[in-house]
Length: 201
Image 1 (cartoon, rainbow, N blue to C red):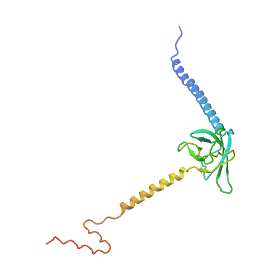
Image 2 (image 1 turned 90 degrees about the vertical axis):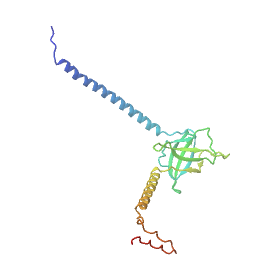
Image 3 (image 1 turned 180 degrees about the vertical axis):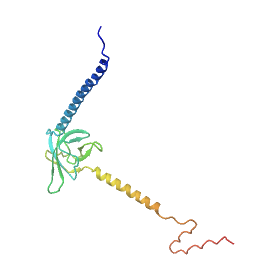
Image 4 (image 1 turned 30 degrees about the vertical axis):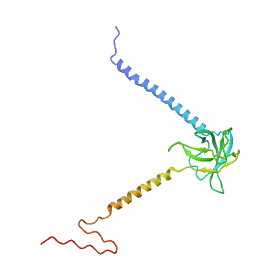
């Protein structure tokens, strides 16, 4: 009759965690590899330039956050991409070259605004068509533009306004109040009020 080794169950229990940990390690490697592949595809896709359509240009005072490959949207629909960014040596403004899908004709009084999806979202170029009957030709410039708004400047202005309000409130509360029972100060050109009569005998 075979004898049972009392240490056999302990050995089996000791082997199970090692196999489980190796499986978890392999699954973790696969997940990391998948995430790395998705990140590479996202970077490659964001850096592609779309040459479909015709080109237009626009000049802005600031284009913070707008980069080559950013979307050009009309009514929330992507109709092109930013393909070039330079600085005009005469006006020192940012010159943006972007594409517009064929079949979409923009009036000459259309406007271009650098905006963002959210506070932490990426920037894109939003086009707002005008009402003119003449149409922008390929290579034309959009004259009505609005640059990006700096969140840092908005936050700094908000913080400064809050601190100024707090300091003004503190100065009001720290001002010494009049002693109780004292007569109020007379107005300019008015005689001082007589002192109250003593009630002591």
